[in-house]
Length: 204
Image 1 (cartoon, rainbow, N blue to C red):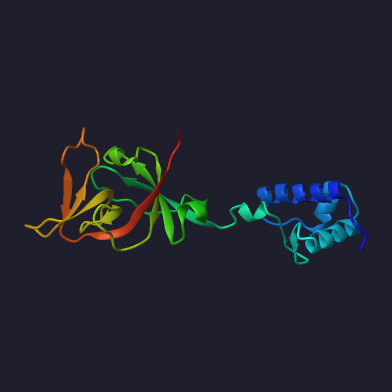
Image 2 (image 1 turned 90 degrees about the vertical axis):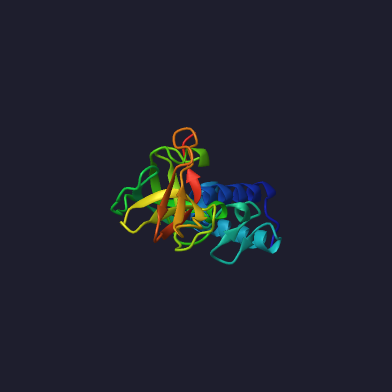
């Protein structure tokens, strides 16, 4: 095969990288041809030769470059299901407002949902009014975890799980606002954990 133009190879690579950043997938041969201003057959021949030279990886459908390998390709959708009280417990009816796409490289994998924080009882933990709190669904928690908890009255609240009270054997949910709620806790006989907070999404 006759050697191809290096400038056009670079142009094709740049187009592939830009396309991937925008759409999170490889462009087609036809899209590359239109993007760099060549015929479809020329685009295909260049891709084949660039693959043979190790400039790109091309299997006839997917195109990968050193730059696309660094792009985040794994995403998951987490439903925003309303608010959770960061104060006194409050009954909330779960309803999906919208779905938000989040990268697994930052937020990890698992089953998640998002709650909008209401109240000021968790500000010392970095959770403020209207922050979006990413909750990982699980029914267990370790001491020190920030949990969405459901008590025996079916009321949910976002608090720090502080272990079991030795005298009463009740679960302790601690407020995280020393100025407004010094040493305030909630004690429940039967604690039902609906999930553990793993991240907070907020505006700066």
